[in-house]
Length: 486
Image (cartoon, rainbow, N blue to C red; front, side):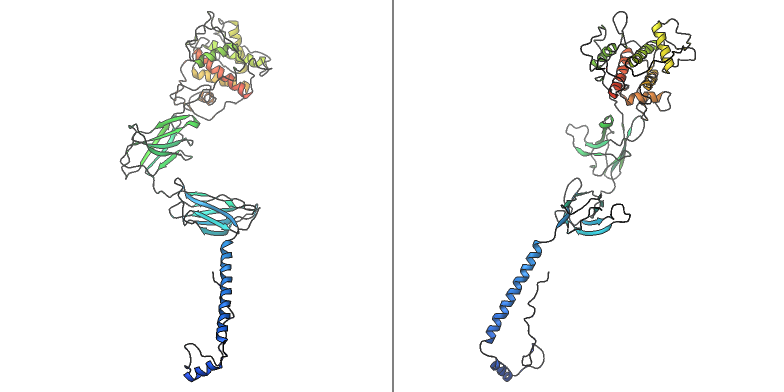
């Protein structure tokens, strides 16, 4: 800032005044004559006046400078620039302020100011013009960092706007890269998190913090220590994938490593709490289920509560025996009857006789159940003329029966595009039905990523499948819970 000088107090030289360092030097006599022409006391008075004026002007200049320092302008937009991860201040970063066109108007933004950050990473824009019909945004550039281009925000002048920025360092080429994929489908898992564990055989682990993979399942690490054994771990619990790790690796300091980590989805079976909300202290009295898991016991008790099973004639359930196709027909027909009794499904106007040649020895209830399922499209028989009532129901057959039953309650409500099991390729007949039950938590496989599509269904398993199915429909409001308010 230029401080105002004492303008107007320097006089023009008069003819009898001598110039400084210029022209002819006056003689001693001329000097004496000049001194004699000055009235006594004038030099002292003039000196005092000049000194006073200089002091006044100097004081005004200092006051002006102080006023300018105290009023740098109204703070409008400010923030701090830090390094991502370390949160160290980024000094000397260039911050550019852009102003967009009015909302609804096309065109590029215009520059509205530029500044640099101080040693604390702080920047500020003052006296910025306020608008409520357009956005401002900031661009931050700094050596060694990726350029940051911020989202738009409105500055309407009512209050200062703070825009803090984390700059990501430019790290160069990574030393460990890889992909996290589904062990069954081979597709990337974008929900995965990966991290590095050093010295996997040691009890005292340390490593690199976890980071999320990209949308294509890829990841990268830049700061892996050379000549130190490590494993790369990955997990995606939110998508049903527990943690798994790579083989033991060693980075030699020169050659980058590429890793593929396969995760196996662990499906979570749904419970039956919605279906059993009003079950109370009901007890089936079945005598041979006490050794089963609590989940299986609860499902069999609930199956009896809903009247889907009546057990065997000797008071047992025989949970370890396989389910025959005729028994499956009875189970499903009783579920349909419950849906009819509660007004969810209409009774067919006419029951079609399927004309199967191998069902004549069955009970009338079993034959009626098969005819009902045939009429509603739940079963089609094993051939055009046979039902194979004494054949075991395979887990693949069970899935198809259940999905067709579900279509009576909500058409295509179990449709899915997911693939869940390593032994159920998309090309397998009825694979879509198996995956549909898996997506609903009705069938979850064996815990190792397999489903066993050709294995026979046990009666204990059938209870779980049917009750989970009923529970899902109760929760979705397609079926009422038995014993609840009508």
